[in-house]
Image (cartoon, rainbow, N blue to C red; front, top):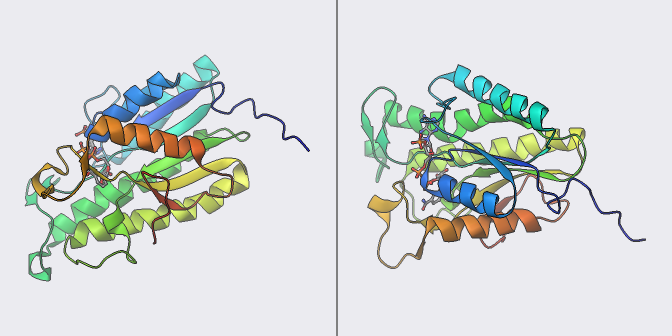
Length: 247
Ligand SMILES: NC(=O)c1ccc[n+]([C@@H]2O[C@H](COP(=O)([O-])OP(=O)(O)OC[C@H]3O[C@@H](n4cnc5c(N)ncnc54)[C@H](OP(=O)(O)O)[C@@H]3O)[C@@H](O)[C@H]2O)c1
């Protein structure tokens, strides 16, 4: 039997939302989605409305902004991409956090901030944004994770807070995918590893020998992975080549 084409599929691009659309990879994803014909809303700490995981109410306010836009335009939300993340920098308490080379460097403030930005924030995004996905037809929610969040792939150690917070994100993605499938069997929810990409997040750690790609190249690869996700791949973790990453 020939499958009936899905009218809400990427043949007729609808709305895309990029959270962290002001970051290195996020901004390139916005450009790539626009080139694919999506109407794109990008939200970040410097947009109006602002999205800041340090203030929980901003997540709900941003979701309401998107809901209003969907109602006005009648477009379906076909891509929700969460491109936020934290590896190093200032924490909400004003201290500076760096990835830990040893357990001697573990401290509560750095751990809390990594978990806030890499896991708790995306979890609140799930609560407020996943209900905005259509109840029928293919749509994709993708959360940028990192291969170093893979427990199975961890042979080097170090980077405790970042690794652990991305592992928590991966569990959240897998769990949300199960619930999402009860609302819409064609909806997909995945974690993505973008590769090592030339952004402010990776810049201090990009050692020679690592293959560092531009944000534009990474975004193009990631969008191609999302377009090609087969039915049944929801709840999984893929790299920028579309290959599965072990949990
Ligand atoms: N670059 C790499 O090599 C690499 C490798 C593996 C995984 N990743 C993952 O890819 C994702 C994007 O990273 P990137 O390289 O594009 O990093 P980036 O340029 O530093 O962007 C990080 C994004 O996170 C947002 N963010 C930070 N704190 C936030 C907060 N309190 N509330 C809301 N948003 C906040 C930033 O918002 P503002 O724009 O408002 O600052 C920015 O949009 C991250 O999840 C990262 O872990 C990156």
